[in-house]
Every structure is written in structure tokens, then in C-alpha cells.
Length: 115
Length: 111
Image (cartoon, rainbow over all chains, first blue to last red; front, side, top):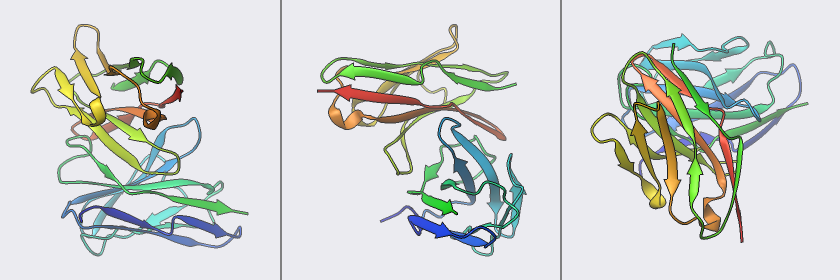
């Protein structure tokens, strides 16, 4: 059953702690993306990776970090430097090419709450 | 510059009546256009996509959209709403190196 998995579905952390969100895909897609979704603001791009061992900052990368050591995996770390980390985080993948070239497939999301 | 505008933040229909969710785009190039649906606390699911092959695009769950270049529109329609269609819908425009999400339209379906 192909798709994108994100874990956990809900995550709670105390302020000042780093937290890592998992994203795995078995679609054999080259490109992967992290978005943040806040009510009324649509989706905003955090980071993306078009190929293993390479990634690029999106529109709101400050306070986040990523790695892409394997094609299937693109974990996102929310650091203590992120001023307002509470949000719904969505991971997506795309078969290849530049962002916007093809449709993206989304995971089920992780809701992060930081208190 | 590319932009995607969803003209309504909220649309309410009765079950069994038609659905119309409006989307306008602007792009210097011929764009790819997508509609996604998101149910509460879920990821986005692709409903349909336009990539210049045909202007009328049929998607899943009875939805379709028509690309009208003269009106720069890509409105999403469904002849008869079902309760399970209640969700948020996103119009998305893509071109090489750029992907723009609309702000979303929340669809409510009354029994």
C-alpha cells in the first residue's frame, strides 16, 4: 500500500525543547516537502528536498531544520528557536522535477502543540 | 508573478444541490492547476489536476473543474452535494519551480 506516513499524529512538547517529526514515503518519489498549516493562512512551505543529501529553504525556514539521508525519509526538527511552533505540519512528496511540475501527495499530518 | 485566489472563504449548500467553488489564477505561463480536499485533521487529497491536455477535467467523487483561459478561472463543481463533501478545498497553481496554494474554501453541507 503506497503512500506517505507521518508520525506521531499528535505531539505535545514543552517550550524550549527541540522536537522531530517523522515523514516516510514508499512512492519512490525524488522530491519531498514540509508545510506548515495555520488556521486561515493556507499552507506555507518550510523546507524541500529534490534529491537525497540536498535540501532548500522554503518561505518560513527559520527555526526549523531537516535532513535527507535516504530517499524515503525527510524528518523535520522544530527547534527552540521557532517562536510559534504550535501548528499542523504536513509532509508531501512529488515524483520528480521542480516544485509545481507535478501534483504532490500529502501525508496525514502531525499536530504539534507546544506549551 | 503567479497568484491563486479562492473567491469564497466559506460556501454553504444543502445536500443534493450543486456545488461551485471558485478559483482565479494569474500566471505568466500556462500553469498546472490542482484542486485538493482536506477533511478535519487530515492531509490533503488530490481531487483533480489540469495540465493543458483538456480544459474540462474530471476528478474523484463526482467533482470536475473547467479551465477557462479567457476568464483565468478554474472553478470546481459537483452536480449534487453529499454530506461527506463537507471539508476544506484548496486550489493550487503550479509552474516550473513555483507552487502557490489558495487560502482555502470551507464547504458546509446542510441536511
